[in-house]
Amino acid sequence: MELSIAQPDDWHLHLRDNELLQTVVSHSAKQFGRAIIMPNLKPPVTTTAAAVSYYDSILKALPNNTNFTPLMTLYLTDKTTPQEIKLARESGVVYAVKLYPAGATTNSQDGVTDLFGKCVPALEEMINQNIPLLVHGEVTDPKVDIFDRERVFIETVLKPLIQKFPKLKVVMEHVTTMDAIKFVESCEEGSVAATVTPQHLLLNRNSLFQGGLQPHNYCLPVLKRETHRQAIVSAVTSGNKRFFLGTDSAPHERRTKESSCGCAGVFNAPVALSIYAKVFEEAGALDKLEAFTSFNGPDFYGLPRNTRKITLKKTPWKVPESYSYASGSIVPMSAGESLEWLPIFP
Image (spheres, helix red, strand yellow):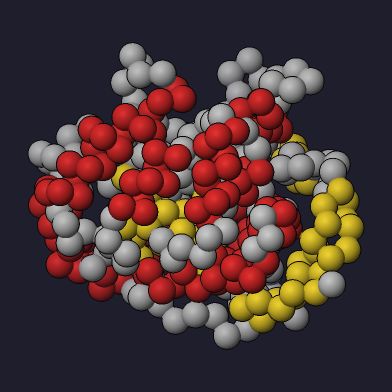
């Protein structure tokens, strides 16, 4: 059995920098035509000049004869100016601005602390320039249970944000709860959308603890109850245009995951398309897969759909236990397991 689909794009990707960038970029570049690149480096990508420099670094790291376009983002801070938003639009390489609540995830300590105060001029200019805001949708108040942070964020931040700026395009990234699904479905199509990861479609929070602590399944937002996973699968496989592929592939060196204070992030780039296909097949919705992987994202961003095709072949293949590089190794999602769908590229 084979499926031929338009080449997908990844609308949420961490490529890191330096040696790690060199190690992981090929996994995404051979599968996806484009990817929205996250800006949470050290230091974060807060200016257009930094985004252009990072863009150049990614191009230099790409394998030869690769048809892959990085779509850059700016890291929103309390100090982001309207002029910086204008420069971003004029650059031709920046396609979105990322909101990290300060302290929400990896390298987010420089994130926003005053969204409805200091960030208002930048948000207004984003509307003028038609630049989407990409949202890590979790509150960081330590009094809020970690499994409730997405739901509380919707009520206290996202709903007021959209009420205050109804013309702002917003992507709620890596949604993990039925609360997020219901919220996105309640919003105007083309105004608010959401990305969905392989891990949040395939795994629930039991996967963090079965057989012992599983650090390579730990990500933020954290995996949730099975009822939430089922709600996400139902929404994604329904054909709703508000949802599209965003892997949130987030590589960390093995020792930083398997430590006394392990990093959050799942490196899923090598297996993402295989897992998406598995989820859609199990839901009886393979006919909806192409729209999710290849159409809904570019349609929301106002970009042309890819014309190249890839093939997904129903043939078992084994995921490597790890990928080595000079400074260590990276463990992928589903390491050592057998997957049933194999992407084949022209």
